[in-house]
Image (tube, rainbow, N blue to C red):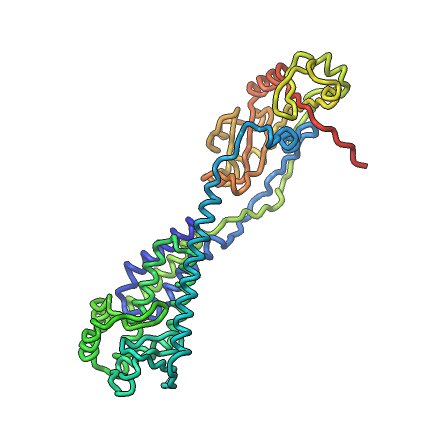
Length: 443
């Protein structure tokens, strides 16, 4: 949503700076509508980037963090209580406001349908006239043109006004308004939609004014006619109507000329801007291709297979703390016989020396976030090390909802030889012992 909003802001800023005051009404109509669609779609576009295949790190046989966490964390006994869910409240508020706006949108459509069904219809050129009992400004919706009955029957409606409103019908301006109003029901939180909606309506008036001047060839007379109608009230929303809040802009536009060179320059700039936005706001997807020289990481076992006999556990770890299913820690000697049988030792990470190819890949900050000896470092720090300086490493994929602003896809935890020796010493002094339920082996 942030990408979409920023993209729309840039496109609308370009319109206000370079397009709004130019006599490019058809182009501007397309540009404004396209800006709305483009800003919504562009964050969903994916650009594939080819990259050497990222190594996948297989978990060690005795190391199963997901399984351990699942068995040890009990929501009933866990001291950590879930925080207040602001996202649920925000979602509820969003859908309530959206529902209210959709109801209002439906009521406007219903009121127009009532006017059409309850009053006399007369066929007039490309439109269907709806003769209303009160006299007011002519206004249109789809192919319906709403006019005062007495004014129509007495032929008091000026031909310029008919031309103006028929232009709205022929160019199908109502579809633009319906699209923007419906979009606003779902994106009401974006203030830019108010401004774009106003810009689209004003552009519709420019288009209709141009058609009137083209057909009747009398700018001054038409301007006087518009001024004489300023005091009349405006009809309901959703209709293409003769409004005069931007009369000054419309008068200036009637006499303006735009050169072909100007059109070419502005068009080129608009196209260049779209290309830049696609490159900036689209999603980049790294396509993995096999490495030309694959190498296997060098590993060796940490220790002999661990004893599983509870008597041997008693002999080795009787004074060590064991984490139970409730999350509490108790000495091994204080456990029940059943619990002792289910004690498992989680083995420390084995020594693993990365290959040259792996070490080189980790220098890419778009793909990897690097930790060395439990400290976050920049990827270029790896230039100070060699692969043989790393005693052990582990890697994990960073899911989208947990991804940091840097945007890296994998987190790599590296240990130098000195840190790895300290780690093994700590593991020996304080082994990771847990009580786990044993599952039967699969056949």
